[in-house]
View (cartoon, rainbow, N blue to C red):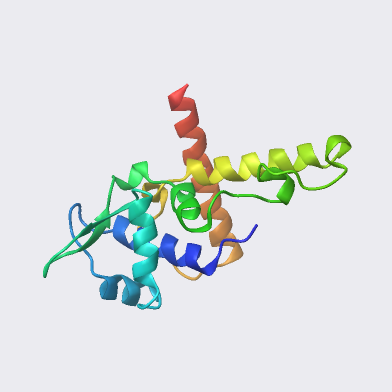
Length: 162
């Protein structure tokens, strides 16, 4: 599974909006410039995010875009699926039959578990979980520390909901 370039741009746009003051509207040009997204491509993505109830649009001379819900209620899966559709690691997991050996395939359960874990992972992380800014250069050590912090937030959230 690979998130498309459109999915990446949509995630970046939502990250930008999640960092704005509540209710503040951001223009397409502002979002595109801040997140290095091609400005001509962004309106189509924003329409898809509006349809998925991730983003709101306000029309008019002082209009723009903002999150449709608090950033703690919008997860990565919401955005990925709005742009790229449901996550499917292999054809056998997309609800369709995939081949003539499906009935006795030994890999099917492995892919089903992997797909569930990936989907759950993206569902567990909201845009409120992201740090406000990246500290320093992205190195393996910084990446590992960031992933450890996110995993800790996820575990705390799950234990609090039990």
